[in-house]
Image (tube, rainbow, N blue to C red; front, side):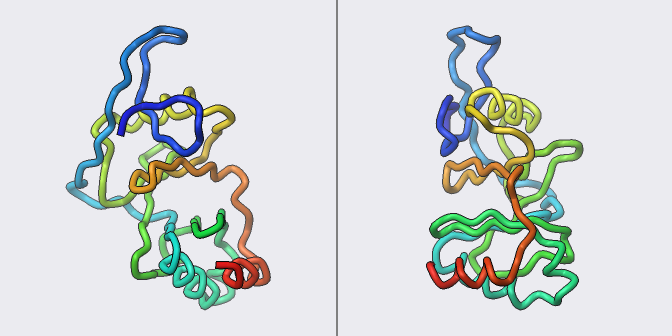
Length: 161
C-alpha cells in the first residue's frame, strides 16, 4: 500500500515538507509481537451482520456505552475492551499510546505510527481525529461522528444488510 493523497478510501504514507515533490513511502503491515488491547471492532458483509446481532445482544449497560459508524456493509463499533462484542470474522482495533488513530490489534505499520498518523491527517481532505485505519480494505474511517448506539438504529441497519 503506498501513500495517496485525497480520497478517504486510501491509506497514506508521509511526504516530506508541504508542497514538495517527495516520493511516497510504501506502508506494509507486519505482525505485531504483542497484540494491542482492542478499543474497536469492525466487520464487513455477513460478518458485519453477525457483529450487529451480537452487539444488540450485549447487556444494557455495556450496550449503552458503545458508539458506532455504519455503512452499506460495514459496521465499526467503538468502546471499552470489556464492552466490545465478539464476532467471527471481525477485526479488532487498538490505539497506540497517545494517538487518536485506531489500528488493527494484530498488525503494525512498517513506518512509525506517528508518521502514518500525520501523513493521513495531511493527505486526506477533511479527516480529523479520531479515525480508524482498515488496511485490509485500504480504508480510513473518521470516528469523530461515531454515535452512541441505539437498538432501533442497529435493528434498522441489520434489516438493510
